[in-house]
Image 1 (cartoon, protein in one colour):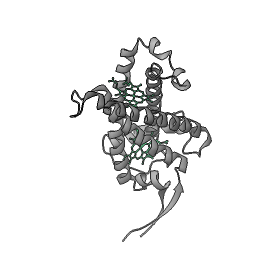
Image 2 (tube, rainbow, N blue to C red):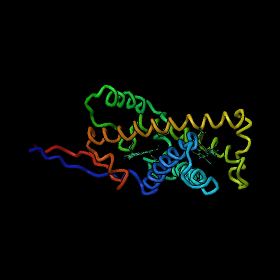
Image 3 (tube, helix red, strand yellow):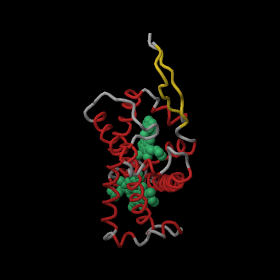
Length: 225
Ligand code: HEM
Ligand code: HEM
């Protein structure tokens, strides 16, 4: 029997883990309620129309999750400067040659199903990092267009800050369509993301999935036969 000893590395600090799960829950809630806002049911329940508020509730959940999502996102931007080496922006924005080499290696693993050699990165691999960066840009876009639309129906200061977005983007109809299309980016991202974290958990054997719960990843030290 082969004995392999592992060292453990504390990769994801508590703020990153909390950020991740709050964000994941918010995105699911926003996509479900957003879909309903875009395709409302034509039927009402059996009660009189004045007695129905389900659509209001759907919108309320959308806006509540939107605020949570937005402040959580702002916090993660800050944590990209303040967090440990695995949380920092340098992991998301490729700028070193090794990161591009690793991206090519991960593409071979993910697309061509090549056998994995241990990847240099212990945190996000470079391809995952750049994908998360693209998703952060999409978060920004979704927040700007969302608060832009919300400005028309809110007197609060935060949405009012975004009031100029709607005229700049060509009116409410155009902004809603962009906001709607971006929902599909998140749906596709989430499906591919969950598939890939499961796949990497399997091929790397370093505890990828549980690392987002407990923070630790495991690295092979040495092999004793
Ligand atoms: C991942 C994040 C988000 C997703 C997937 C999402 C999705 C959607 C979708 C699909 C719609 C319906 C658009 C249509 O077809 O008419 C919508 C509407 C809307 N969303 Fe979002 N949204 C997100 C974030 C936000 C944020 C951060 C805000 C900020 C307040 C926001 C505010 C709004 C507003 C104001 C509407 C229009 C509601 C109405 O007129 O009844 N959304 N959203
Ligand atoms: C059951 C569902 C999910 C699981 C098991 C999961 C798991 C993970 C894991 C293990 C990582 C770290 C992977 C690595 O080392 O690169 C990660 C990172 C990440 N995930 Fe998820 N995820 C889920 C859902 C989502 C959803 C719905 C979103 C939002 C669209 C999301 C967005 C992200 C982001 C942005 C990161 C980077 C985190 C950071 O560094 O701040 N995840 N996820």
